[in-house]
Every structure is written in structure tokens, then in C-alpha cells.
Amino acid sequence: MPTPNRDPEHLAKLRDFYAESRRIPSNPRIGELIGTSKASARKFMERLEKHGFVERTPDDDAWIPGRRFFEHALSEDAVRAGMPAMARDVSTTPFYFDEYLVREPSRTVLVPVRGDSMTDAHIDDGDLAVIERGSEANVGDFVVAIVDGDYTLKELVLEQGRFALKPHNPSYPLIVPEADLEIFGVMVGLVRRFQS
Image 1 (cartoon, helix red, strand yellow):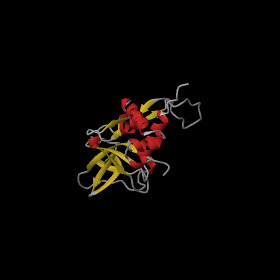
Image 2: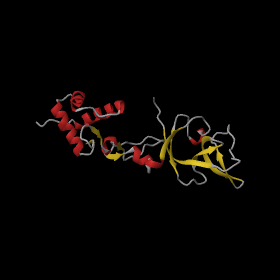
Image 3: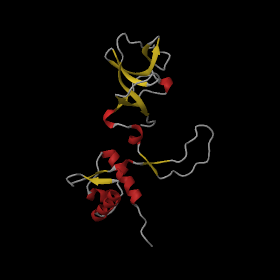
């Protein structure tokens, strides 16, 4: 009987190790991590390299994550927020958070949200706003703007023919800048973690 392929299980352990330490360990440490010899660990890593999960550094002295190292399975079915429906197994379609949220890495920055002025737009304290710098801002976009030297995240609106910044919490007033309004960037996504 052939030995079952435990590579997915071993890859999961390697990903967990990377999430905690932000590095891929040496082959002996990988062997300890997955419960195999150094030689078996090396063969495992070569299989991962063949499939694009890891690669060698340019000077060939260490393993680094490849593109597929960060892939996640994407379900073929959307989850209903209303009545429950029959769910199928998660598909093997790869999904990459970074590629979904970030179109141009050189222009993208994650900005922590502080305060409650946007709660009615479901943008809460502690969220990370994905901001594209240099993108053209249109009325209705959520933007990070600079007003009197301070940064703020608000909806860009027109108020009596002038650009203004609208909070989404009735406790806060509309911001109508006295001088020119400087847009730092446009919000293109939002990241929220529900458990710490």
C-alpha cells in the first residue's frame, strides 16, 4: 500500500510557522517541524518548490515563500446572510488576498482607522483601510484627505458647488475646507479581523 501524501498537512505546519516567525526555517528545523529526517524535509521542500510554494534566495542559502505559499481556497458558493442554504465543499480555486485588495503595490498603503465618525458606513475603529494614492477621487468615494494638516477618512461630496467631506455618523459635522482640499488617496478596500 502506498504511503499517503502528507504534503498538504506539512505545508499547513510550515505556513503556521511562517505566520508566527515570518521566516522559513532550515531543513533540519523543517524536519523537526513535520516529524521527518533532514533528507526527507529537503525532498518535501523540493516538491513545494516544483509547485511554486517556495523558492530559493538568489544566493541559494535559504528558502523563501513563493507566490502559492500565500494562496487560500476560495469557496465556489457565497454564504447567505439571510436564510441558511445547503453548502458544498470549499473548492480548490486559489485566492490571494494581496492580489484581490492591492492592484498597484507601489501606490497602496494600509491606514489604520481610529474613531467612530464612519460607523454608519460600516468603517469602524481598528479597521485597516486599503488606500490607493494618486487615484482620481470622484464624488461618492471614501477618501483619506488632509484638512488643516490632519488626515481624515470621509466620503467626498459636493456641498453648494464645493468639495466637502461627509462623516457617516450624525454626531459629526460635515467638513467644508476653507482652502483647497488635498486628497491623500482613495479607499479601495477594508480589512477587519473579528477575533484577536
